[in-house]
Image (cartoon, rainbow over all chains, first blue to last red; front, side, top):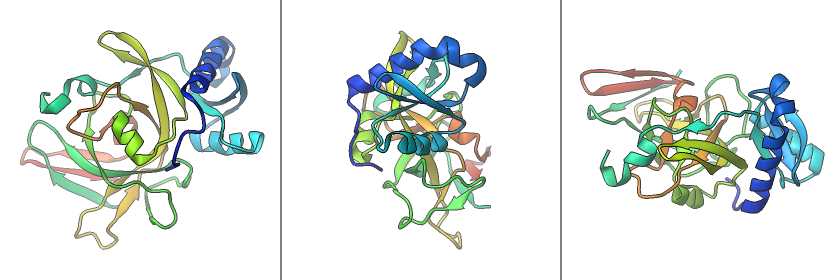
Length: 89
Length: 149
């Protein structure tokens, strides 16, 4: 895996906010696909995660971009994600 | 296709896995992972959780493995929605020792892993349905399980 993040937490948040702002336009045609986001702007939409990472490299020449799924649904991590501490599940 | 076998205790099902770079390959089926050809993590302990829609990683494990956040997502919790980092990777499962090939086999599709909100779990990652549904999981009443990928 890569040694460290090239994007700060603030940049990741900014890109995520940009995606959420664009969802009303993106969702009808691109739900479940993956958006490339950099500097708070959506650059492209790809069908898969792997395609998005490759397209981001080609578009920007580095990996200082986010890859965000086009969705308005929160992730559900299940009961174990907050009930298993120290084997107390 | 490799079949990973093991034992469960009737309560939980744990599996040894590794995390592989999401862009390592775009194979349409399982593949034997050559560590020299892929960015490849140390083995970690995964808890299979069919009640989770997505795979998740404890923060300390993400740091230890050097995972690079690729975005953020909203996570539903008992106390509402929180924001979490996401990581992209593929899951590779450890083949049984008696296997001719041995080593790890990567599931075909990259997944978006979510960072858990704390550490201290008895596992390193939670394998959600995004990963489990890429193989055939059989849980037997005699304490055995198999996962065919």
